[in-house]
Length: 363
Ligand code: OSB
Ligand code: MG
Image (spheres, rainbow, N blue to C red):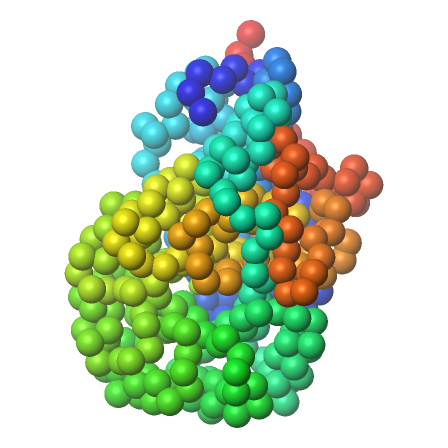
């Protein structure tokens, strides 16, 4: 995205109720409070979605902070034609800016994000993430419902006190289901023997059992478990992925563009993993249809050999911000139109918007 002329940046806050509340050890979400960006160039406009959540409980970023850093530091640099790399950190804010600029550039060029990233699939297997529920009955009902809808993989959120029993109950009821768990860093190496009990359930992987900076702990756990270790929060860049793989800290990587600063860095993480023979899958951040479209493009790259947290619109929002993404035989179609291939529906956008602000270059 070099040298594109951006003449206006619109920052828009939206608030959308989730179809089902989503709880993990890292957060509890009933309503998605998100930041959208719209950039205007002389040739086109483009949309970006910032995946930062309301509170800094997944990683350090949060939506008010992302809004502030875009308004104060990123948008002025973009409008002045300067490099955003000079700003340290804030990968989710930068990823949203990059997404909007890429969308505008690709729309002007008539090229899809899928083709730009090097995607090779026309559709991708859909997975679904199921949050922590009040009781086992509610969890089993939720999983049964998603399996009946055709989801090809289920991920369960786990935390101390909600792990071996619920995972065992889901496995007993769905013996052949592709099943995995995500701990959002809720354990430590002292829990290794307890976590080894999950080996009995033939899980595809355990995601981020320990703190994001504990690569050595994950490497030790990998030696003690049969279940593959997958990293999410720890993988902040292609360089971080290379280091984690070299240390033996993970055998699988969850790729989220927001966490690594954008879709272009996400592709580089994919490339590092593919070269090392490490399978990857596309993580999710409860995105609207805008972020979902971009995630589908990413998930169409060849190294994405495991189903991701990329679910149908109906799992998250009704109505979705865009034309809804629907499951066909447990799969989602990768958009093929220019840029993201989707735009917000004006009526829905207007009804969910809580604040709009436009930034232009100084006269
Ligand atoms: O850890 O993967 C995570 C949602 C918000 C923040 C972090 C995570 C998640 C999910 C949901 O697991 C995935 C989805 O979008 O379906
Ligand atoms: Mg995760």
